[in-house]
Length: 84
Figure 1 (cartoon, rainbow, N blue to C red):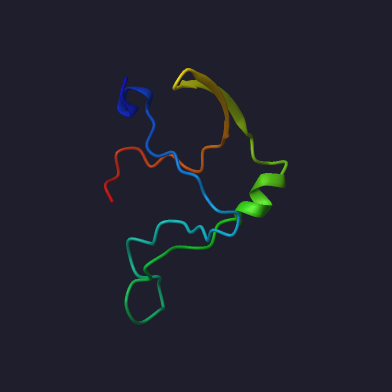
Figure 2: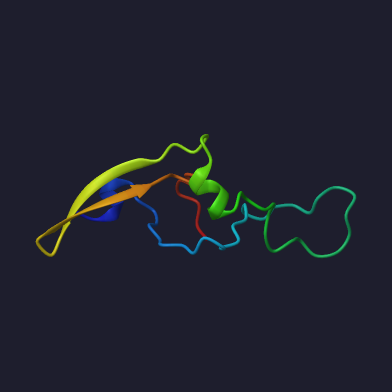
């Protein structure tokens, strides 16, 4: 089964000190000059995300090479069919 059938866009391991950002705005912010920003606003850091009670973590067990692995994950955002 492929990731498209499961509606999975990306699964990634991340460092706790990773800098996460929203997508950049499509249009230049009103009243600002210069180029469009390459990144959007800053997201909550991974260190804070791990302990934040508002984040709803989910668990799934998968079979990999005859071993069962328990994976904890959360969904950051569903971008649907947007192309990057």
